[in-house]
Image (cartoon, rainbow, N blue to C red; front, side):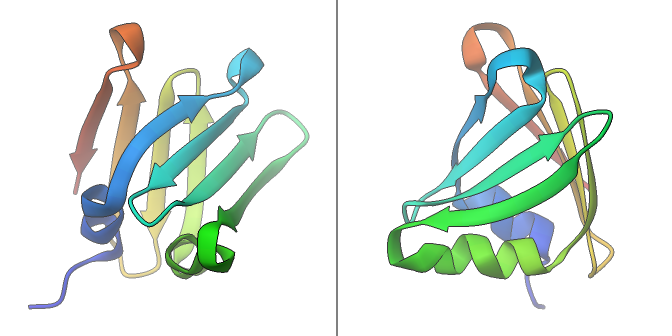
Length: 99
């Protein structure tokens, strides 16, 4: 059975960093690449970057159908029908759930 994009991101995730104002978040992956999300009233985008031109991040970004960033919670839906719900808890502890 092939791994879903949500499972692949969950297994590759090192850390989640919230930006100031809680409108931006970066997900840093084990290969040194990252996914940078921004969501506010006027803007919604995701960009891949990092080492090796962000190959892992770029592959994951290409599969993102939509996402929501609300405070410390990032919800991502992928085009393979998988999803991932990430929350930054107390002291930056990362809480994960996928479906």
